[in-house]
Length: 351
Image: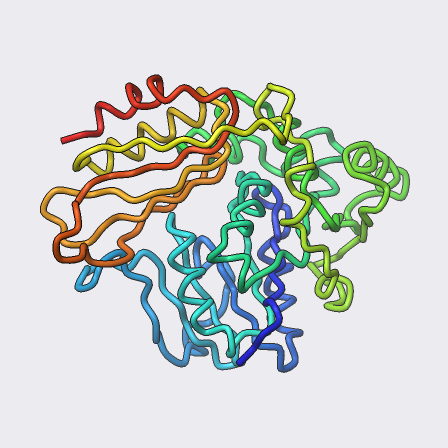
């Protein structure tokens, strides 16, 4: 059995920055590495469906459910690819069960995803025991950055942001650009052949203002970056991500010795109303993590809930035991938390 942690490389960057091209390059150059890939849309990778061997594993929310939350595909080159719409944790759980078949995990974020909460999710006990974040690779669209737009098509990026209720609709692109760089362990300047040497130097200077001196920058044309540069950085980013500042951190100064931890007990709840209430709570209060379980009417299984930042996962983990009280308990970790205020915010979710 494999005992060392599986290294995960997270690739982030705006729509059009070249993430997918880089991902394809890695898969094409894998040369025997057993790579598990998590993407939002499998088709975006441009891998011909005929190279799929099987669709062996479905990540389902509940036994017997018709619609899979994600799907893991076996690729003919020995890699695995998983499509994920919303549920991250169940996919990680399934991949953890197959750890002996994986050498590297590769995650492509959506164009507007903030990398910090994703890296923080690797601090969860169920994930950190199996995986470590080898590095966060941030793609920068060099021509767009040189033009002061940060994205090739700012209008398309804004449309994507407005269509996703989980994203910050107010922050400008420069702030989001800063936040994607804030978590970077390596910056890839894509489309470097499409700018002049002077413009390339300007973009390098722009990025250098946003990242520590230890973060290296490499230039890329058509996503061609040696695997030896991309993989095997051994950063263990989850261990120090909390120290990285981003524009979407809570405004309060964080005294890491002054965390509050409290739990709220409820009866049966409506799942949709519960998740809406939790999203509102983390936006309005200094909540860093949420963990617990919920009872849903008519369901024989309990719903496990996990949240880091604004990212939440909810899935059925096991059946209620005979004689076990079917109730809801949520644990909140943060600063300056008030149990009465949180309970009131959750009241509307109870049945």
